[in-house]
Amino acid sequence: MTDFQIAPSILSADFARLGEEVDNVLASGADIVHFDVMDNHYVPNLTIGPMVCEALRNHGITAPIDVHLMIKPVDSLIPDFAKAGATYITFHPEASEHIDRTLQLIQQHGCKAGLVFNPATTLDILEYMIDRVDMILLMSVNPGFGGQRFIPSTLEKLRKAKQMITQSGRNIRLEVDGGVKIDNIAEIASAGADTFVAGSAIFGAKNDTDPNRYNTVIAEIRHQLSQFTSCPSVK
Ligand code: DX5
Ligand code: ZN
Image 1 (spheres, protein in one colour):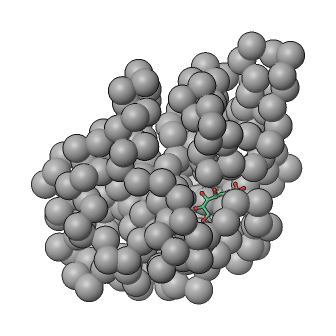
Image 2 (cartoon, rainbow, N blue to C red; image 1 turned 30 degrees about the vertical axis):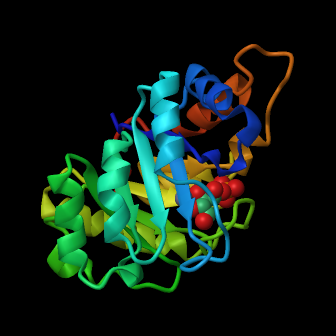
């Protein structure tokens, strides 16, 4: 059975009630918390840092927190995010001068490490780095904003990444981020993804009459994924 994980991106949450929003998506069946960090330098937007991650832990969030760094430089904030309770820390190779060193730094601080590939970035770097990574994240939009449209060439790239993971024999999560919706998630899963970031699709679908307000949308996502009882084959 493929272990699919649903990772709501809190970028689309109501920041004035962040703890409650995260409690709600987790109570509604989400698996991990996707935490988008933007610096208005590597990407043209500005979001949240380690203090907010720590605040979520202090609020009582025990689910894995998946910190997606869209910042440059990367290294100086890694110890801070590890201390703040990050589980995964992923970064864009373009944002680090020494990618192998950054991956090691993340792992030395007790977190799982991942590389994030922009739509135009090739997977070539994995030829030498695949033994180091715990997660591969393919961007299916250009980083910086929620609510964009899924870029279809990501499907081919997912198949390629999945093949590389299978060949490595390692236990590496394959995550996809951007434009993931109920109506395209099955196709994305069949291309090999096992971890699905969804921001606007989940937080935009709130049902105020339901105490677990994201139940319906997360149940629909699970239903779409339930057709895969074993790991999708790689073409
Ligand atoms: C974009 C972020 C995403 C974003 C996804 O740079 O990395 O995590 O929140 O949002 P949706 O699911 O709305 O495309
Ligand atoms: Zn993200």
